[in-house]
Image (cartoon, rainbow, N blue to C red; front, side, top):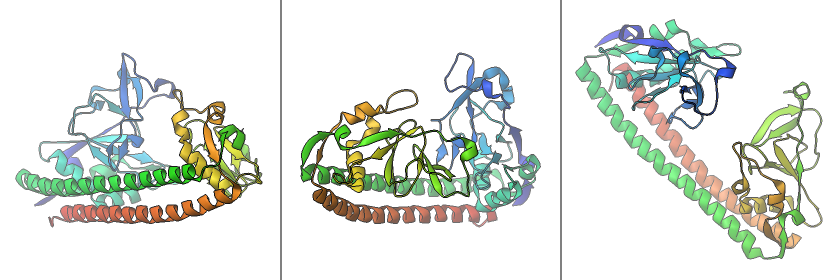
Length: 372
């Protein structure tokens, strides 16, 4: 079994360079889908967030072919550099300048090469070589000079068959664990609905229960990573600043983008203009209960538009039951018990998924050493 450099058995093609004005989110008669680093995931090729460029910008050899290995060459995260995916099916697309394509010669099976560069030895080596101050960049020569074992084609086929078998088993396990996670989430949502509906109370509209105030934009000059006040976007913390827009505990509600997403905030914060934040009467309502109530109302279903957004007047019109303050606190206590149990189930499932990932890496490492 001989050791060869990747450059001996494959060619490396760099991606298309294009201007900001060349990229669009919609197709046109002369447009070509462009794969970027965000489309290359550990789970496979993600095609839900494509951009399109004029087809004339891509050279013939920059068209993706079946059997190509598309990989991330540059990224802000060193762990992402070197991530790759084998193109199993024909796809009419090209790839961006932060990506590259390894195209195997007739000396190596594309599936074998794909497995070799997924081995932890290669990924760690490339991550170390690519590490930079702001952007992590994997150089062409670093890829082409990487040494791998290249056995005869028949032996490559045997190794690929064994690795395919392991991959299939782990994929089945992962799908089963994902199903368990989904079932756990559905149980929690169903139990949440039951807690709220069984409590009864006064029939009201959401607008009578709470106020959804508009967040405000925050100039970048006022964003400070060393400051203590979190700045919230539609789905979480985006930055930090020194002065809060709202100083009381609240619920940040996604208004645009991740519309309807909920984040419970127990400290002063600055909700951005893509959000609402909850203001309520402390004598009438418990904020934790309101968080449960909003979950049960399923606000994301109200989202409309190309960039989904929620109209607060439509949210205000939703009907709900408001129990007494004492009953709200009782519901909150029961919900937290339920949440804790569901969190433990989810954590256990994630631990099992992590173990499966470790097994896969162990098998790939053995294949890279020639011990499979």
